[in-house]
Length: 473
Ligand code: SAH
Ligand code: SF4
Ligand code: F3S
Image (tube, rainbow, N blue to C red; front, side):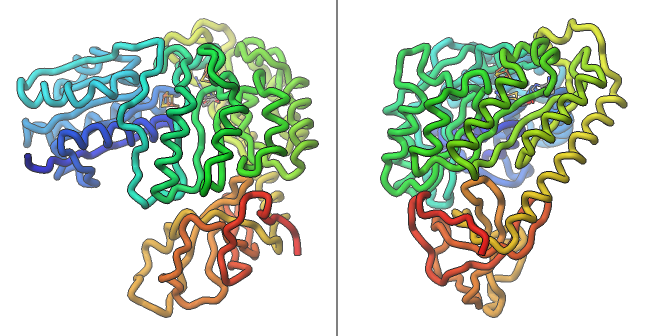
């Protein structure tokens, strides 16, 4: 069978990145290879995100631009998957006549059949059927291509929390966890192909396994911590209401668990948190941060904030800024509230104007910029252990044949800070296998989103996290 080409555009969160890997993998059975060229593609898939209106608009503007290609090449198959596909279903085919397939978040394993049917019968298909139980893919361990140091691993699907602003429970379905042995098998396969760090994904990892009576999340972490040659474990997202004392202790007990937690607060006002159905107060949140810092003093804390939730007064908003000053986050993602179909907040009174939301967002970003820059500057002169992920983007643009040019590498600290660096011993060093190694880097420059330095020792230090360094010289 002739090789066919698949172009994939992935929009949205890490779960979509993981799903896109699954999609690419399952389409290999139909001899589809990835291509970065739209013109060359026989199949175009857009894996979509519905979290905010802007993400959805991005999807439709990309899909709209494909009409011309389809006119020129009627055999081209155009498919929409992911969260917008789940949300809109057949309406997308009505709106865009040049599309062939809409497949939802639970339809990935049925995708090869759908593509084959469309190719043979020239029909159009919508598959947005959902299941309450997560289906274990029979093609686990994607992307074992020896090119990756770090990979995402979805450990659970869906969400049962129904925060009033959020579309996820509607587009990803009920919460359901994968079996631990399958997760571990997948990670082992990754590690065999050179992966050294995994990020475990779930909308609320702390409730992992509860419904199905599997092991707890911390027990799962323990088992993953035992996997030989794996160096680092990360996870996202932990819901503040469910962050347990056991998980807090794990930051001290498990040597491979990175010293970073993403703990979305959303708002610093208890009134707004209640309207959001978040089920914790700012006091509970602050108490948990304190416990985390007591157990693991160097832990980096990042968060998500929504500004302009319906009914958010200036006083509510100032409580968010005040909480930011109390916690001093290492970084954050901030968003303007966006109405989502089905979400309960759509009906709430007290709409905030777009202009006001924009201004509040800017205030949050400016304040955070101050903390991020200050924290990064404090690392100048320190030695940081970095897991090398590859050549930095800047490096990818330089001419490798110039042997006098030093390679610039990129990686992250355990606290999730990006570090770009040169090897101190110098020229080229291209034959040294750096990827997937832990190296000590002396930080000499601090920017708002990254650090820069040179390796501190000639030889990479293959040590577990316990041996990782973060000190000021
Ligand atoms: N499960 C994660 C969040 C996933 S969505 C959790 O509970 O923390 C990622 C972030 O998008 C959320 O934390 C929230 O800050 C933001 N978000 C979700 N819905 C939104 C909406 N309707 N408008 C603006 N931001 C939203
Ligand atoms: Fe959305 Fe809340 Fe579930 Fe996170 S916990 S995915 S914000 S409903
Ligand atoms: Fe977006 Fe779906 Fe993720 S809505 S944030 S791609 S779960």
